[in-house]
Image (spheres, rainbow, N blue to C red):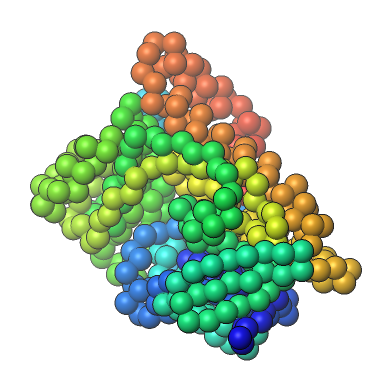
Length: 395
């Protein structure tokens, strides 16, 4: 039996899988990415119309790995974030207090995928295997053995980046803590009347948050934004079934004061909302990154940034490991990754979950608590700077 050998095998060729493949290939490791879909086809890349919120901290990570230069021209700066609790009078404004700096960026997923795939193809030590279904996986003290429908593979390390419903996690009987929110999110890319002025909006309703994220538009006469509206499953499904002209009117009721009339819906899709956290993120030569390790409520738009920090952390650990001449799938690597990433994952999971809970309550005590909180933050520049830095991924 002939095996395809690599230093590390990555399962899943989404944004985080491609990122970690590039990060590890860049430091000289032989990398194989396996995905059940044809991820490099133009149709597959363009099909993903979603946008990603990239924090200033994540931008620095991408920049240090020479990826940001390919994204910059298609990135939309976020210079201000305006937060509203039900009404315009209860609000917070966040800006970057450092001169000439921004809070983050919105980039369409297709541009991130194109940049990463283009760079990966320049490296002979990175191989992408598409349309390949995993059939079996086994780990030992010395290696990982993987079988697909057509090939057999061996490596020192397996990286699971195959999403929230990770197949690798199931094969490994990895336990996970899950939470369902009984909500769905309607994601729409729209063309609208008013200039968004590089501003993102987060409006909290009892039924769930509605976010307006500015998008890059190369036409000076049109303005684009992405809407992420969280609500009950039945309500979101009913919205999704509406014809576009009627849906535009419904969206207008919520967004007109911020971005003017909705002129056109470009694309839309529904996602069920849930969160999870693996009880272990590295064990038996298997490391979990991105959504295979954790998923959080989209209330703060930080899920992808959490995955980027996973990727950077693993890259640094493996650089150190290679320098010491240690096996990259050793218990040393497993423990170090677990230790360095667990707190960040757990804290962001808890923060987004508790924020969603607090803002969904509408009783007098909770409303009063939120009002006092808004007043304290507005009156305390140091606290506001701290929150801003955290959201930017710099703390």
